[in-house]
Image 1 (cartoon, rainbow, N blue to C red):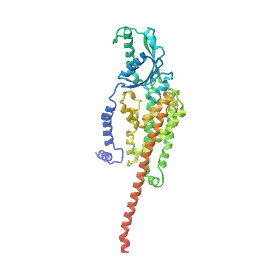
Image 2: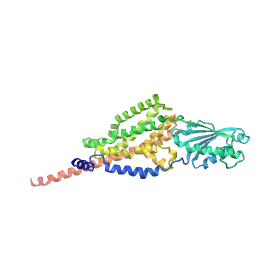
Image 3: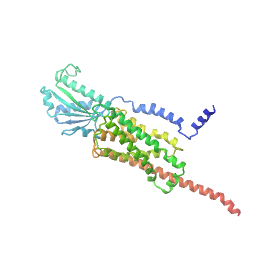
Image 4: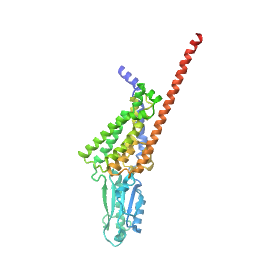
Length: 393
């Protein structure tokens, strides 16, 4: 009983992880917050780009049918030939439909013809509804060509068919999907565990006050560099194992990916220091990892396709740094994009990084002012204690 009382006392003492609060917070996040965010189980208005080389009344009619589907939203129509892969960069499309030249003529003269479709297979679930909807559109069109308007009879043979191709992960390899996602998720999580308790540790060892009084925010940020170096090495090692031992498709440039990781590590490190700043000790700080790391893993497109999420959820997910990491992973590793191909996403991430830097600096200088004010008050109190003695003397 004494052991139980002693442990209960420690649990509520605030000296370790505030588990009594964390367990309630986790339950509420999962049952309330995530149930609202993850209530979609199908693709709604997934982005579809169309390369229309025929540019005819018939292809425009097909485009309107695609736009009318609840599963798809046409975001771009291009009338010149181009590499479909470029339309997938920065998650601009989940599928690209290709209308070849002469499609209208072949359709009305009864010549068998194909519509090309390229699917983004970085997450295999995100295109399932799109495939179903496109097959239905083609089936109805073939039925109409045979005079059975509105029929969904699969026995009717039409002349139009889909020629589909899965890009980026055609073999549906887990090394290119869940395994890669877990590599970046757990890497980011344990990097946060290693750094989030730094400020409480410096405070307890009386090293924080000199930094606040005489240093700059960079004096704290520079301390995360050794941990960031370890994280980079671990990721390169993990990617090498998946490439050599597994079947990872690394389509882009490794140096481009590592260059972006430098910015990602600084951003996550700054957030880690910020969230752990007010913790009484490193143990309490560690529990705050849940506030900004797992959200990106849930909403970043690795566990569930972003096409299943409402637009506001996709926008909201960008407050989590791991969401940005998965953007870069899909573009550089899976799709082979260069830095210029993802300039818009990288520029947006730099803005995000700038906001994090501003918040961190505000936290630093607010703590400096509070420390100076506390020292001034302590000095005045000390002077007040000595005044009566001086008056008597």
